[in-house]
Structure formats: C-alpha cells, structure tokens
Image 1 (cartoon, rainbow, N blue to C red):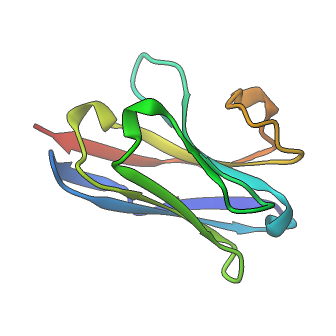
Image 2: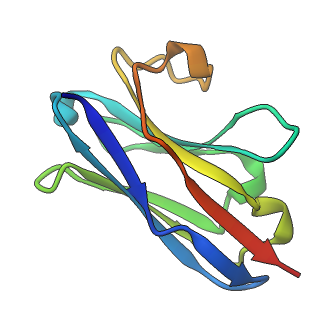
Amino acid sequence: EVQLVESGGGLVQAGGSLRLSCAASGFAFDDYDIGWFRQAPGKEREGVSRISSLDNSTIYTDSVKGRFTISRDNAKNTVYLQMNSLKPEDTAVYYCAAELPPTGIWVPELWDYWGQGTQVTVSS
C-alpha cells in the first residue's frame, strides 16, 4: 500500500519555525521527485517546493525562497521541509506528493501519490 504521511504541523507565531516531515512507503521512493504543496481556505492548491530524485536539485516558489528548505533522506524514505521566518500568509494545509516521471512543474493532477496533509497555522 502506497502511503505518504506528513507530520510536524502546528500553531506558531509569526517569525517562528516548523519542520515538516513526509514519510513514504509502498513505492520506489528513490525514483520519485517529491514536492510540497499547500492549500489555504478558499484558495487553489499551490506548489511550494520540490526536490529531484536524480540530483537532489530543488525548486521553490518565490514567496518562500530564502525561508524554506527542502531535503530528502532516501535511507529513511523521508522528505523534510524546514520553514523559517514564518508569516501569517503561510497558513495552510501542507501536503507532500510524489511524481514520476518528473515534469518540473507543479500541476497537482500530474502527481501520482499524495499524503493526507498537515495543518500549519501562523499567528500574527
């Protein structure tokens, strides 16, 4: 059974930090690009960051550049999202997803597997 399980969300004050984890099982994790998406109430799901299966290269959406860092540990089948200097506009449900073959873009319909999401709330 394919599973992606996010954890690490919570309530934090503006300027604070959180580290999200995404634990994967049931598929060839090493072969897949892994991404983080988020969805705020009333808004569409948007791509936040992704990390390549080939060379661990990373991409970030402009609004999180310099604040968020994505990394992966293939030995643990886990991807992390370190979020620093959090802002109220970062409040959303955060999802991790897996994609093969990698497209380099963040169209949610192209991603193969999804987690259930973890809530991140940043208070002002």
